[in-house]
Amino acid sequence: MARRNTQLLARSGAPCRVTKLSRASGHGQPVHGEEGFHSFTIHLSSEGSNKRVAEEVVIPFWRDYLQDAEEEGPSKLQKILAFATGASVVPPIGFSPSPSVEFIHKGDDDFSSTPLFPMANTCINCIKLPLHVSYQLLKEKFDFALGNPYGFGRA
Image (cartoon, rainbow, N blue to C red; front, side, top):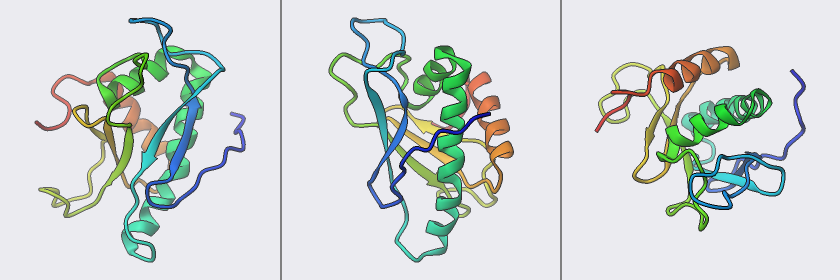
């Protein structure tokens, strides 16, 4: 699949250009179009830390996954947006809080082993990505998560 050269800043709190998603012109309108960009803020660990190094490996995988989803069509993008925010369309006034990306590390919360699947907290529009070392593994686990959302995650 063709990869587009998109700029991705790997600083804490820096925006990640996700994909071409315009705001819905009205309630219930699907995510589509070329006019705008919907962005997630990436929250990275401290510079120089081992956690940061692992996170920086996953960022290009996340970007590639979104680009591949864009090529598959708006339905896949809507599923990803709904997974992260609970809404399959961008509200006319945008999201509050702004969507963000965090990473799941072994030892965080109650994880005694490395998590395999992404998680989301739709209350704060946050997607939490596991630290996979290959794009194929991230894609496989994310596709599974999108296809099996009920009971997926924690309260």
